Image 1 (cartoon, rainbow, N blue to C red):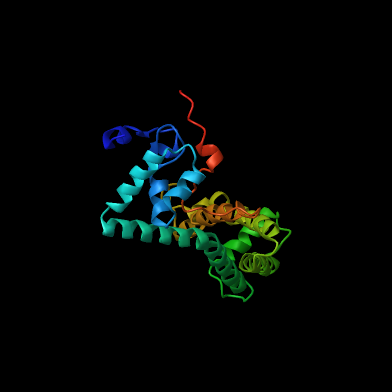
Image 2 (cartoon, rainbow, N blue to C red):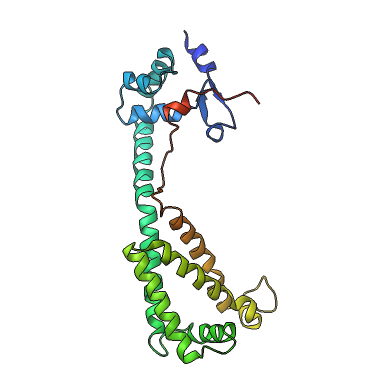
Length: 239
């Protein structure tokens, strides 16, 4: 089979791998094969892992890899190595960074006058509790709550309970936008004050907590998810 015939077998299907070039209708991307070759996997091993891939097709990709510009191959390998490291470190780094923020800011609330957010936080708790919880109790209570969240995130212990505490804390943290609009917005919902901006940025913490929550059952990030051989062997059904 000549090169032109083999090139015709490389196609793009938006329903498979987001439109990445694939071999025929299989869930085997060209990028995956080149990546396996870059990692040092042998031609025979690729054929064994993906038996639906014909020898001529695997050989064609091997030639593509061998004839590639060495700098491009190096860049591809380096990019893969970097993304692999990021995939491994991203969620633990996120958890630790959030833990530091909650532990630090929570500890400040335990010392009178140390936290610039203490007054607004105290009035928020007092308003939500209908005056039952006074500012003298609210600030240290909130500080201890945030410290507990910080310790949970840093240690990785009882993550489900920690994230529940975080979710409840976020409800209170965002509530001044509704309870005190005159202080959090400068006349327009599109023009938050400094306090409003400080509160709105909590959406980043909420999104980060969702990422961490997605991993509590053993989930993890993958730099390059590859379809298992069983899935790769199934041709895409015609639309």
